[in-house]
Amino acid sequence: MAEQAQALRRTPLSRDRVLRAAVALADGAGIESLSMRNLALDLGVVPMALYKHVANKDELLGGMIDVVVGEIDPPLPDADWKRVIRARILSAREVLLRHPWAPLAIESRNEATPAILDYLNSMVGALRDGGFSTDLAHHVMHAMGSRILGFSQELFDASRRAGRSGTADPEPPAAFPAEAAARFPHLAAIATAASHDDASVLGPGCDDQFEFEFALDLLLNGIDRLRQQDWTSSG
Amino acid sequence: MAEQAQALRRTPLSRDRVLRAAVALADGAGIESLSMRNLALDLGVVPMALYKHVANKDELLGGMIDVVVGEIDPPLPDADWKRVIRARILSAREVLLRHPWAPLAIESRNEATPAILDYLNSMVGALRDGGFSTDLAHHVMHAMGSRILGFSQELFDASRRAGRSGTADPEPPAAFPAEAAARFPHLAAIATAASHDDASVLGPGCDDQFEFEFALDLLLNGIDRLRQQDWTSSG
DNA sequence: ACCTGAACACCGTTCAAGT
DNA sequence: ACCTGAACACCGTTCAAGT
Image (tube, rainbow over all chains, first blue to last red; front, side):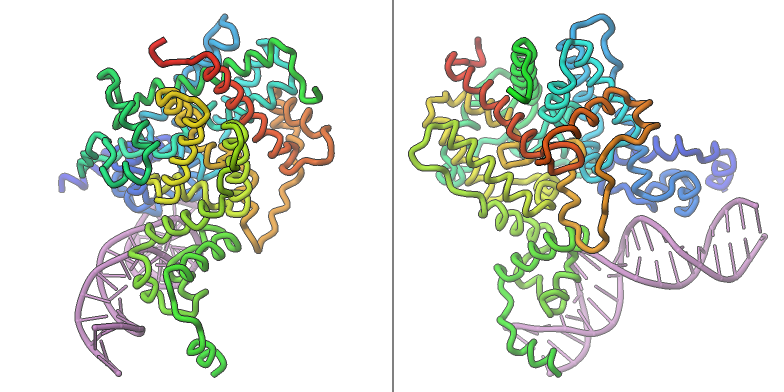
């Protein structure tokens, strides 16, 4: 019928189409909905057809990660190292906000994809161009850790849930329940102080963008200080 | 037979015994081997018996996380805030090295357990005792992120694999393959510089403990500077 | 009332049979 | 030679039947 006709007319599968459909599925329905079977369903294809284009699910995830990392802005031309690094990391963060499943996927796979290696390589290059010794650049990369890819590294990550469609998850705007406030008074004090802030809060009580830049600049300023002092690991 | 007699004599199941067995299974065989069925097998029990003690697998993971977090040393008594925080985070890191599956489990669940809330609450308390305003303490907690629980937040985390038993995974001691070195020269330079370090290297080429403390002190020193300046978010 | 085997609704992936 | 349905070896969890 109509479905059959559409199937015939459908553009043929390709690795690219598979990866894009997988990213769209994970963005829209959450990473827990990304199964080979569901993906095949979305593409109007039998599950086994996917294995022509990706070796297995792990390789599929690797490809999806490369699609995401490829969305990060290229380095600013003609800027000092700090602006280059800062702008790139903030761009990476924007990308991850669009693909909230990506951080966990990257951490679970725990193996760098080609696009990630490219990105890291160019970040080290920006440091070297900025006058960093190989030694200091090395430690700086470790110190930035996954934050260099835009990871916020929060303990409870409100944005992770943002990708979920369907079941609306209202999540009352924070405000510690009274009994929790009694058991964890210091946490309650912090949560309360945060919520009488301005209106520009994203999460429940906290301005995620502010916190991200606070941590990022704390690191960048400390790093700049080491660079100015010609820091070396031996002294 | 012998198994039956042993089964009769076996100490009865309890939530505590279930959690300890689950942690032991994840430590020894890797988190990917932790299924309700495998865990039941280890305990000499039918899978459904577990559901008497944990509501489901998610609650099991929450309980396991609390066991792990409970292993972190208590705060040093009578020490200044920086030493208290530093010592506690280094203790948390040691705990996570013993349970390499824990960081990913904590991040995947993305919901604080009671033990984690206790830990975070006492860390905020240490900051407040050290003279931090509620405002600054709040941003500091965000800036530390999951590192406050001992997470190393590396991009490729060698320790993650340490928990795997069975199939030895030799992993040649780094040294970029020649073709990768050509494509990622800056990364290659860093890897090479690292490997002519002293003998005390843990991972392939990098001294994980050094890198962890480097990042930690970078943050703590930056934070200390803000505190001395009576930093506030409004100025 | 308690315990548990079988069953359900899923997985990722293999493999052999069909075209 | 290519494609794919059925099957395999797993999951977490439900449920009804057995004691």
